Image 1: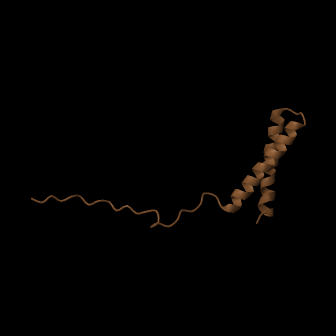
Image 2: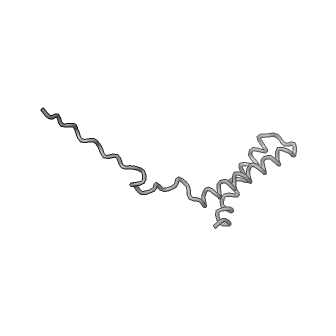
Image 3: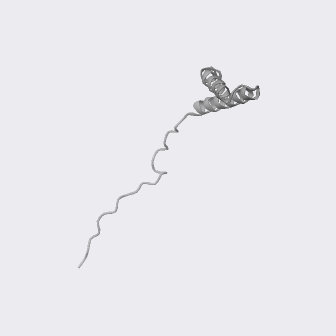
Length: 76
């Protein structure tokens, strides 16, 4: 008596499929990381001047947010 086994699903290896697109492009990553560094520096320097911490955070966030459009055009 022979028993037949159900067919096994074919698993494709990751090398068989096309590589997935990156979540962010290199340009976007560089712009956002640079804006983050600028925001941290400005926020830290503002905190060292003696103002309240929330004001320093707002200064850092504002400078990071304002830097993104400028960095986007400057970094190509």
